[in-house]
Image 1 (cartoon, rainbow, N blue to C red):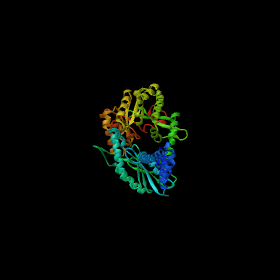
Image 2 (cartoon, rainbow, N blue to C red):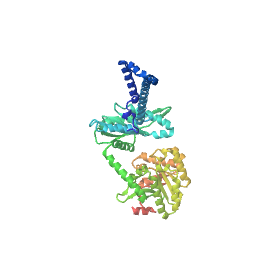
Image 3 (cartoon, rainbow, N blue to C red):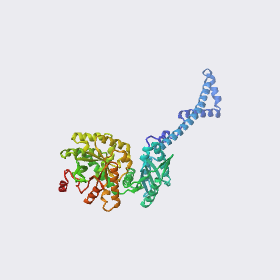
Image 4 (tube, rainbow, N blue to C red):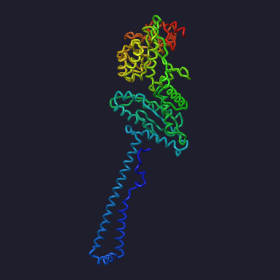
Length: 524
């Protein structure tokens, strides 16, 4: 467990000892002195030395006696020094052991300590069948606080979170910080979902209460994944932590601020995800990700203005893989940028034969906005294909503005400077504000299909769509309505002043772009 060999583990140094040679000298000297005194050997020695007075043997014996006394004093002093050194080494060893098992910021157990505790609970010597729960939780809104207010505030916030979390521990429980804003718990004698559900609800609710760092009020939350272990069972610390982590991932993807228990189906989904990621890397290299085109139609005269580029994966054995199965994985695996640029390259090649002025619309992932060379890469593809930048519309979702508005602004300004049209996609479903619309160089809003498809049944949806269109026009922006499936929807949107429509009424995504609505209808 430790990266060093402990002093107390070395047998030859386990206890301080007096130097053997000096002990022997001292013992012999004392025994000799006592023997001389007890048996009147002093007179015998004196009688023996008289014939040899010229050799001064008596003086030599006196010197030996003095040496013995001096050796005794030195031995005692050295024994005390060795004992002090031994105690200091033990103290230093204990300090090193504490540092090796403790998180320096919060004073909690660290990952190594947690791993050792799990190993002991799962080991053969543990109580057979003794149940416990492993919980992994992380904070839902910690990163913005850390980024905006600095690491000092973030560190103090983590310390307060650790203190509040410790209040929920019982005797024998363990709280550890794994790193960053991720923590882990070991809860003893827990094997029932009902017991842990109540604990998790109380725990998450506690961390949702505001924290005060100086004059700053911080609101964070937590998501938690829970897995159960048993003493003496055929489990490993790594496997148990991985199960809790899978449950945490499920909690975060299903809304955050909640908890989920691990179950075996999660392993199957992880296996499927891993397989898709591996296959996806090969698919990008082999050109299996291809562009499909969905028409963008002028609602006033029914003319096709352009096409949105949609990704489709043509897998040799799985067939057509829908985007919802691989786009998120592509973003997490860092492949989305390569996929988007490949789709644009293929679409531009096909657009060579289109009527002049027909534009392409490409959705850019929030992940791609972190690339400062994005506009340069896009223009390189356009220049190679001879496709005008003015005929390219870049769509971004509202969520792309949340992470870093300044980075988004710089990227949008660079794209705008190249002559591209900018559209805010899925408007009304994310976190953008009127401030974003005023300060960022958008040309168009795309109304989310959920509002459009509910217009027939919901008066609120109709009012909302009408308000979005009116607001867009007041800001000098055009609008595109997604999800149009009926002529009634198209007519109502036209009357509201919406310029462009998109949906199954005008055509489904297809590998080849049709030039007129008649061709779209024939293809359908």
